[in-house]
Amino acid sequence: MFTRHFPHWPPGQPKTIELPRTSVYNNLEARVREHPERAAIDYYGSRLTYAQLKREVDAMAGFLQQRCGVARGDRVLLYMQNSPQFIIGYYAILRADAVVVPANPMNRTEELRHYADDSDAAVALAGQDVYPQLEPLRLKHVVVATYSDYLGADGGLPVPDFVRAPRREFSSWMQALDAGLQPGAHRAQPEDLAVMPYTSGTTGKPKGCMHTHGSLQATTVPYLYWRGVLDHSVVLSALPMFHVTGMQAGMNAPLHLGATLVVLSRWDRDCAAMQIERAKITNWSAITTMMVDFLSNPKLGDYDLSSLRQLGGGGAAMPEAVARKLEEVIGLPFVEGYGLSETMAPTHINPPHRPKRQCAGIPFFNTDARVVGIDDAAELQPDEVGEIIVHGPQVFQGYWKQPQASADAFVEHDGKRFFRTGDLGYYDHEGYFFITDRLKRMINCSGFKVWPAEVEAMLYAHPAIQEACVIGAQDPYRGETVKAIVVLKSGAKDIEPKDIIDWAREKMAAFKVPRFVDFVESLPKTATGKILWRELQERENRK
Figure 1 (cartoon, rainbow, N blue to C red):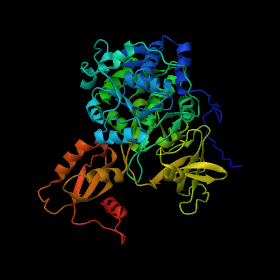
Figure 2: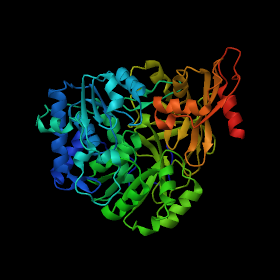
Figure 3: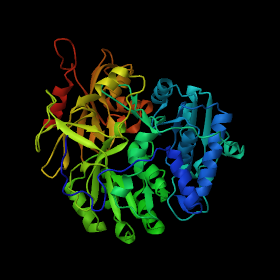
Figure 4: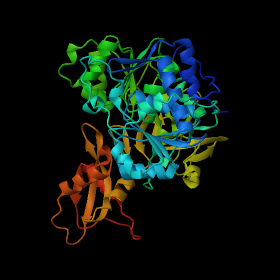
């Protein structure tokens, strides 16, 4: 049997944790019994108690079942910014025994069309700010939320304009709640699908990652215990909740522990600092670009940040200089972790008492991680670079409607089924894992994964583009950004790079839009006509 000694396991923590055989909604139900009047959500100073949260979750679940026809196992699109309504909608879908399909609020109509068509979602919960992008899909039912319905008196915080916006004529969220419909018996089991985040791949089209209540619970229940979270924790929920890291670190894990979520609908460094001081925030999970922006605030010294007890996150390695400055300014180490949409956030986290910088950490509770050879899949030893594979209860079931892609994502190793992360790395003699490269073709923009094939497929829709190849370019702020190498059609000589960029902004999420466009006469190709993207990437890397 495989064993590995981790000399720096978090003190007092067991090596494995018994996971509950319940649905994620049951977590909320349990906290309401214990702390009904505790604040669950703090939204720019307005509070919603656990009891109020559950009442609204149940009412929305009843509406989904009785008025929208949502049945057990149906997929429901959740398309809105971080907000009380996102949390209510998420748990209402689970309470209705259905499956949450979270969508990035930056996605445009055609991107949403793929989500809806592929998942067979006929119902959506959407914010009124993004509803115009969803409207052309003509789904069977859409419940539209107005964020300002959950704002109280002006507390002096910088609230985004789209959050302050008054209710429009098509907003229907409050009517759904006012209907007062109660849901049927909650029947979801640990093996039932709960959430289906979409992730892209080298074939271009995003694929739905099938997560059950069981795989969701596998990182919901133990996540904050690892980080040493205490009762009455106050968590800054600034990471987008449609993404698995924000979903788990900023919503599901804190709610499981009865914490208070201080929710930001959009990142704002001044608002974050004001909230830390005002709400006495204790825990904050972020990505590197957030921390860089936060530390660059010339007014940072004006705020009292002394309530913070834990800083952590992932998405991209934290640069040494930034980590060092964080410790100088805030007095806390940044505890990095590593995970994917397919693993519902962490497979690895650094031990909070002994983190290493630019390091993924050690395998999380109940998780077995190995490094195997790229060519022969043989087990590698410390400091040998290969593909990282993981086995654990948080690993997804496979890709929705993609049997071949699902089969390719797993490998049998040492008698167990391991997920192939597609990331290259190694572990040291203390069991800490380090990510060195990516086996898959992917661009990492501030923690958002951009798959070149998907962007290329969209660029080919431009009437002036004959061929396109998308690569990653270094960016001092985002780590990487998107660059397009384009061959124009004959007769399209009046087109400028800015024209391509402006067009792309109308067609795709902002983080996917090429920031740089180079025009070339031709693209390098193999004898069979395949574009040599790696050659172009290597040229860019040498600049």
